[in-house]
Length: 595
Image 1 (cartoon, one colour):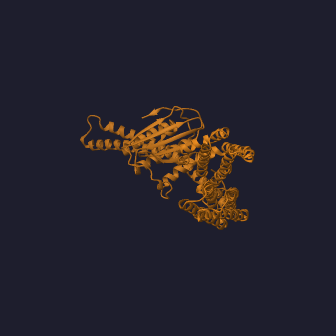
Image 2: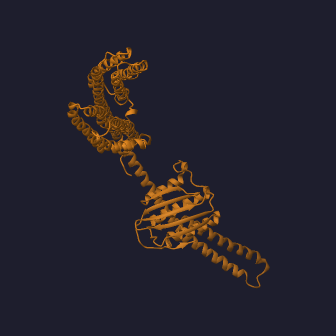
Image 3: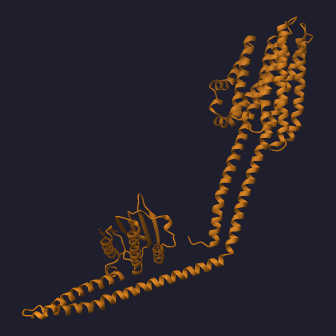
């Protein structure tokens, strides 16, 4: 690729920086996307919990209204229809949430988050509600209590599943985790505790006096309400408020809205607990049923209001976290883009400062290459001229000398020759043999200077002749395979192919320790290819560009001079393959396979 040095350096700088930036982008995108997805799932869980919280609040109220209506309370009968509409709307909202976000939560939930019994309860809860609503006026009070309790249990199972599937119970930040614990665990637990105390206390207030066991049970439940529920709620809320500043910035809404709601609920729960303790202090309670029910209902109401505030603020914390992660991702991507631009800019500036040197080096290299090519052509022309003069002129003189020596030999071999001339005959025979040896040597020198077959018969024949001579000298078995489509190359290109192959054979003899060499001449519509392959020890990678590898350098230069390329490959299981590719310039064929 012929690129300016400035572009090469720019590509080097960018290619070295780009993997780091891509890795950083991958990590930033992976972990921010993961965290964002985690927070989004939690938000989707909150969308489910809002109607579920309404159901937990409304179903016990509906049960109480049903019982009062059955007892003849007309006001309760009037309120019953409104409460049923409220529950219907909660189930409708739950269905909308399931349609919009149910598939996301189902895909993200682990198998343990979807037990079979929970799934059955979730799918049957709306049907159970419709059946209960239709039969509320006909079933017995005891059955009404049981079926309302069953619906509440199904809603709680749904809440547990949503908490697992939406990862709310795995929230990584302390502020949102403890706020989640308040809304998802502590408040439902304390609501159940208050409902249980309301039911038990209301029933006991119908008695004229309380036994010691009943008073003990009330005292224990009151202590549990304080220690297990209210104490844990206060600790969780305090931790959430304190840790708020340590993660994604202080939430002013959380700091403003949560403390008043907590104080209101704590005060109401403490008032209710005080009534329970008063009941547990004496056999005859001074607490009226209406006062007791009103205090419990107020504590439950404020607990649900606190839960609503908690879920709203939890949603705000999650949105703040999502915004923070998006901003961090955008900032990280911006910094990476800026780093890439700075790298490219600095590289281009540095590269442009040395463009003049690059041009001089390139011009000098081209001049040296042109000079080398000229010297090679001149040397080849000189070798051709010397080869022809040796073959023609010296060959003619030696042939004439041999003919004269043969004539002299025939004359000295005539019958009746005096014995004194026999030594001359021996000298004549020896001179004839020496002339034959000299002619063979001259022919060999001429052939080595310039193979006659290369000019007379073409490259394929010249390579066949050269491989036979190589096989005789080295003992390495050789074969030449010529494709049918092999073209007749220009003389310069044929010369380059021949000498490249000759150098490759020299390397095989010196270094390869091979037993077989195969030479292939191939061509298609675009290129002509010379391939020399041996089964030797293989070329060592370090030798390709070693300063002492002048033969390989010469092969590269010859391939470049004819407009082609050359490659050196280590083959499997062993051996080396040298491949020369040059543009095809003719379509004439001399193809055949030569063993």
